[in-house]
Image 1 (cartoon, rainbow, N blue to C red):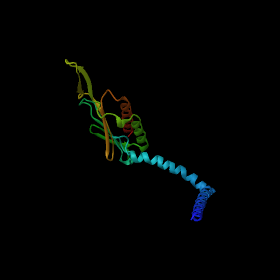
Image 2 (cartoon, rainbow, N blue to C red):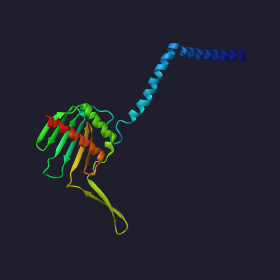
Image 3 (spheres, rainbow, N blue to C red):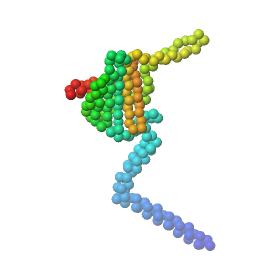
Image 4 (cartoon, rainbow, N blue to C red):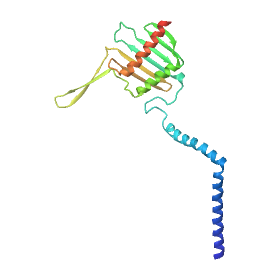
Length: 204
C-alpha cells in the first residue's frame, strides 16, 4: 500500500510539472509573445475607458448628453430691450448649417457653418454654461429685522432689458435669462453672435 501511494504521488507531481512547463513554453514562443504584447494595450484601454462612460451618460446630473447628433442642435438667442419702442431680436442657430434672424416683422435666413457652431458650443462649455443658474433677472438683498433676524427680499427687474439663451437637443434643454448685470462671459459670447449675424444680414 505504501509503495502504491508513493507511485501515485510521484506520477501526480510529474504530470503537474509537465503541464506547467508546457504552458510556459507556449507563452514564450515568439509569435505568442508578439500577439500578447499587441493585445495588452487594447484590453487596458477598453477596460479603462468603457467603465466611466457606462456609468455617466450626461454632463453632470442636469447637463446635456455626452454625445448627440449635430443636426439636432438648436440655439435660440432672444433680446428684449425693455422698451416697447425697440423690437425684440431673435436669432436661431441650427446644427443643419443655417441661422434665422428675426427683428420685429423682419425675418431673414443666412448660412451658419457647423464649424462655427462647434466653436460657439465650445465657448459655452468653457464658461460652464450648463451649470449656471436659469435666472439672473431677480435681484436679492437682505435686511435686518427688529428681532435680530436677517430676512431676504427679491426684486424682479421687469422694466429692464433682458437676454435669453437656450440650448436644445433632443430630450434636453437649458435656458438662461439675464439682465445688465451679467454673467459677463455669457454676454460677451451673445454679443459676438449678434454682431456676426447682423453683419451677414447687411451683406445680403
